[in-house]
Length: 453
Image 1: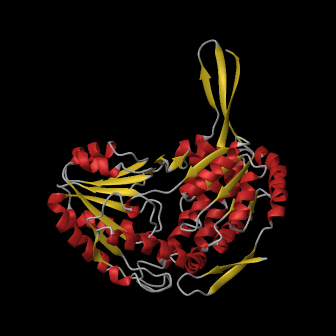
Image 2 (image 1 turned 90 degrees about the vertical axis):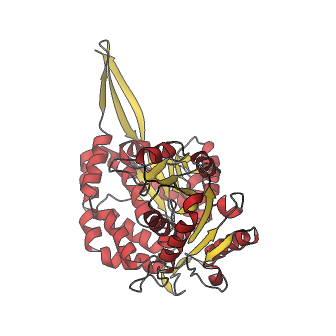
């Protein structure tokens, strides 16, 4: 059987891949296990050298693969090309960071000499989402392989073509069966999780992550889960309103809001709320909505009609619950996958749209009276992936930021950290983490070897 990938902007078939029969998955994993000792034996530096050969290929094919990504997923072409380039740009430096992070460490206390080794687990299953369909596989597959694991990738059924292209580029430089791909939907994902793998790395919904964690428990498989968020933006009364509104629009509507660290809840000081809302609406109105292949598009389609219906349902529920639509309410009707930016004001924090992940181009604004109330509002709920604080007094803004229950917090900027910083969630947004030296080490088993000094 084949799986058709549809262009969310047009509904046209972009291409097809063969669905992996569930019955074939144990054999795929067995082949990965058979290939793992040889891959491990190559050593860190040689594995890095082979993986690094893919960097120039990603850069040379960025336009071609970026167009495929946009046609398959919908995001603006420049973002699709940029995502592919990110897999090749700086790859050598990234691999060097991984090699350094995984080197043996010597510990001595005068009586005992101990070497701490970071060894591969064996076979890693990587299950990745559709919203960043080449960079998310890259974030998981690369450190897993460099550590000496073999990898079976199960990409989203929404974006199988760009994931297959990624595997083809990287796999061309690897021994047979070191990197394999399984195509399909829930049945294939569940079969992979329950198969004879040693580790599972997953990015996706909280509910799916809970099922994976439960399924992994029988075998005590190692698990790294990044489970989305409901990120707050706190705008203090001394913030630069124009800059805060510009950030809010960019981070709420980028990739049609289909980003795990999208700004989904905005808390603004009473004194500046009206000015902030006016500035936010102005920026949102200027954002062009359309096919990602059309020049100038800033907000592409939702991934499918089901996702649009979920977002529209939350918006309608919020308006029925007293939220004031400042922008976009007239665009809720209709079928298809496009949804122009929506801005809501006076949104009750108890409404579903302020509790459950939206993953769409919606900005929800609520006001607060003081810093304590802002922190209390921002910390509500089970998610804790990212958070942002805007304020003029940086010491005050940083103090508020340190009180927020999130793994990554930005002050007057987004949540991404400096080179070497991990991508990490708190509360129910994260179970383990990845990126940065500590994240790379999540893909290894620590072992110590001790001898007399």
